[in-house]
Length: 263
Image (cartoon, rainbow, N blue to C red; front, side, top):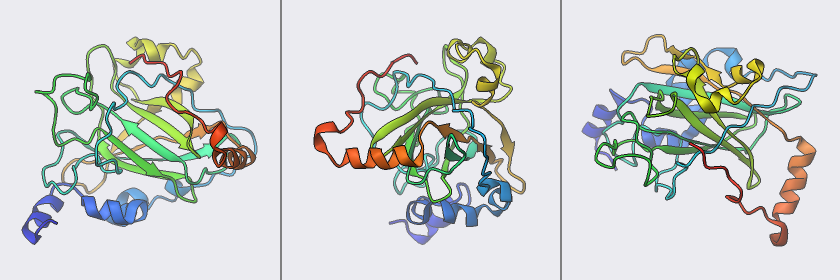
């Protein structure tokens, strides 16, 4: 447990605190950052009638953690009860997971992983261990609520050799991987030269992966907000069927097979 002086020191730089996010989750983050979450569009359920474009898939890459950290919550800036934050531009990353009919997907497990501010991944072969930011979690999980929303506190992605800045995403429901993709910074100069991004030929689909990182009004430490909404190819009926299958051991999905390992 942190003592009172540690709490004051930590909260002056990184907000909200680790325990705050762990216990109260997304709703508490909303209370802590009213300028970010007061916009009604943040929780908007658009109720579209036409089918939505599915978020395009991108490779998982070779750096999904080969050993998950003990701390896998949605605050990647602080490890456990440490008071030392990770290096980088603090980013409040949020969005909504929907099916192709525009319905929010509840209880989807959203995973993210990314390199630290020095370009090093958590994976054992993801870069120099000497240059690794030991305060950065590198991987996080969040389970969506009734509105399909998720929230992470992380850093703005940085460049590392051979790739434009990006954050990896995976969306799972009932133990099944539904989407593997990557989120890129809108307008970044390296996007057009990135081979994996260029492999998506349809401009409309490519645009679904580009995200603005906007300064949060009133933040004294230059925090950013980024919204990345995802549409996955699953209907409520399919989700229910998957849940029934998951209860039968002989047909459980074995995750990890057949994953492409480009970076």
